[in-house]
Length: 101
Image 1 (spheres, helix red, strand yellow):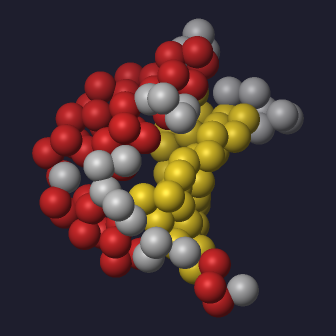
Image 2 (tube, rainbow, N blue to C red; image 1 turned 90 degrees about the vertical axis):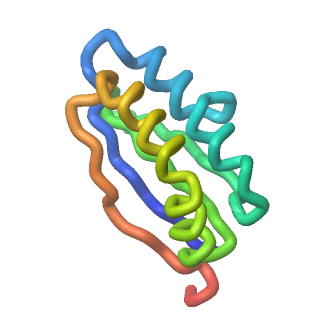
């Protein structure tokens, strides 16, 4: 299994909107669910920095994730544009292959 770890700093006052957009019922998860190789997204809030959130996106493999992004780049970019106003920063921290652990 492949996992992508992202970190977001959410703008003050946008926490609820961010949680709705990136949570289990949000547009990102709905988009990812189109692909049979998507497993889940977990949304975590940093307890020591409450405006910082992390997402863990679980896919069958890195190649499945990359193929998904290539096949859905228009929809991916559209959601990215509509949600970018919620954050101060966004960065992909790391990726993991759980089979190698």
